[in-house]
Amino acid sequence: MITKPIVPVFVVIPVFLLILAGYIVGVVRKKTDIFPKILKIARVTVLMVLVFLVNLRIMGKRYNVDVELKNIDVLFVVDTTISMWAEDYNGNSTRMSAVQRDCAYIMDSLSGSNFSLIRFDNRSQILAPFTQDQRNVSDAFATITKPDKYYAKGTTINVVYEDMRDMLTSSSKKDDRLTIVFFISDGEITADEEPMSFAGLENLVDGGAVLGYGTADGGKMLDDSYAYIRDPETGNDAVSKMNEVTLQDLAAELDIEYIHMDKQTNVEYLLDSIKSGSSMQMASSDDVSYEDTYYYYAIPLLLLLIIEMVLIIRRGRI
Image 1 (cartoon, rainbow, N blue to C red):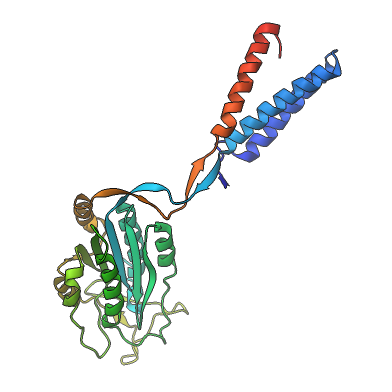
Image 2: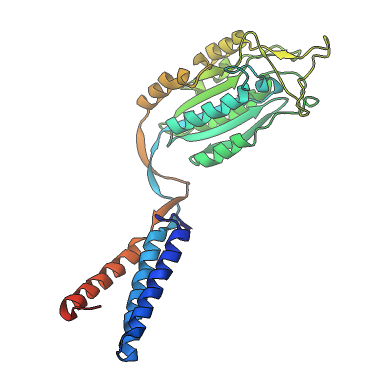
């Protein structure tokens, strides 16, 4: 259970205690029998406790809730090589910071879909299989960190092919699903290896885009010591330049669009198109939801208030 107070507890508690203390003092001073005094104090105490519980908004967990979901599987394939930390996005922001913001925006726009995340640098890794739990995928994005410069061994997109094939195949086996891919990279190839063709995956993809980050002028990259990484051949600061040709070729092989991402709105029209081509269906979500339980306390509170009103009308006092 969790609580989401309407009025902060640190405000409510002292106010309620002052009110209750003042009431008790007033009742005790009256020259009446002890039993009616106890009964009055008990009634008002119960009322205030119920008001406190309603204000506290105690919420219980619910599992396997039936929700309206989109018939979309969204696969993010993210280049996490060190060049993705080049500082050439809208000034001196890193490419990766923009990627993480843009992917969060895409997930919010396509909320109700299944999401999956693959990252790749020297190797490929499935960080999140397809899941309805958007928070789980967001947490997976948060684990992406800049690789050590000594770990980097050159960039190639070839390493991610098999994991992409496996995830796309698993999605294609589902009935009435749209499989959407967002392949995210700067397209820079530094390994002594020719890019392989991804055309064999085209029949497993229903839509999406290759999203390109970076500029033709390029950007420098900080290492862990907050100094810029040096080019060992020249001794100068290394500069990473995006390669749109590689990305455009990949988009053509997958039969999806290529979009240069220099601002978030560049992908809006595509998201609108994906949503308009999808359908909604009722399904059991694996997300945890929370349900208000205030009515458990509001009903007895209402009954006690009615009783108090009757007593006031009949006796002219509480």
